[in-house]
Every structure is written in C-alpha cells, then in structure tokens.
Image 1 (spheres, rainbow, N blue to C red):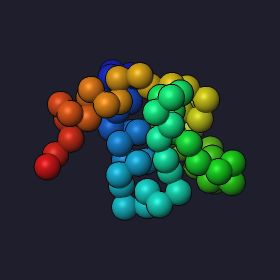
Image 2 (cartoon, rainbow, N blue to C red):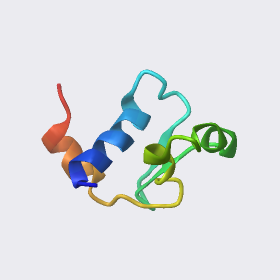
Image 3 (cartoon, rainbow, N blue to C red):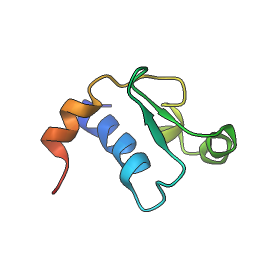
Length: 68
C-alpha cells in the first residue's frame, strides 16, 4: 500500500461519517478505539491492520491531503 492509501484509511476512521468511536493517540501515533469496535471491523483488513500499528506521518499527510 502507499502512504496516501494508508492515510486515507486512517483519515476515514477518524473523520468519516461513523467516527464517533475512533480517536488518535498523539504519543503513540496510533488509532485508538475500544476492543469491541476493533472486533467489529476485524473483517475489514484495510482498517484492522492499524490496530497495533503506528502511522507517524498522519499529521503531515493530513496537512497535504485533507480537504477543507
């Protein structure tokens, strides 16, 4: 996957229509959410890959790709 594709997945989790459960841990640079939500999205491989994976470029890529 490319950085933009990874960023899009995380951005959609944090800022998408159903973003009320997801948060961003600045210290660990990771998406955070309750285990029940991860279990629910576990069938979506694209999103579930970020359960234990940091993404240190999120802030920088958001300033480049995010739409106003």
